[in-house]
Image 1 (cartoon, rainbow, N blue to C red):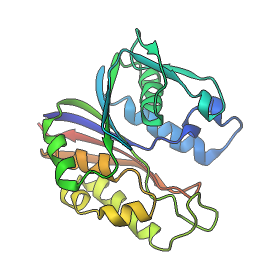
Image 2: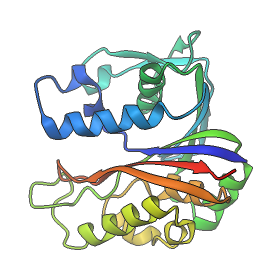
Image 3: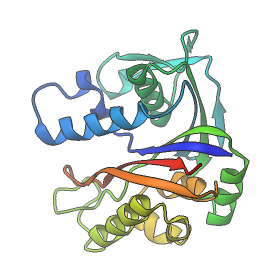
Length: 222
């Protein structure tokens, strides 16, 4: 059973070397992500979306070179360098910021149905790091172009995360999420399948760069 879970986005701009210079909105997002990750224990399981299912063990390491800077991260102290997808890179970077021991990364196909996401959530144990962005269609300058449905979609996600409303997360429409460029749908629904009586705290929710970002901490009530 999952005892603690943290929800964060995974934009490369979280890494200071990839986004130098002062930016209050970015600083607030980064601070919330690091603070949330610090609430987890020493060993994590991370869940993110990917074109295909994949498990990356804690013996891996990688670099953000593909995003402009050779910022190296490890999933544990003994990580061996290889090419890692973005969710794994951000998981490794957050592990280092939080001083955690290790993180195993479970990547789940972005086409996975809600029921299958929930089934995976029931199988997971320990401390969980959920990596996923909201819609990338907030406003005319958004990466995916503007879609007037984006604010309502991410508002619903924020409310569900703030209340630990697992049913609301499971009811997110996969087709709508895809149309809105919301890659977090699958990992959020994995979390929703974990079950339990949760105490939730929403640390951040905004779309400062045209993409919805949410940071939340869920802790199982004793």
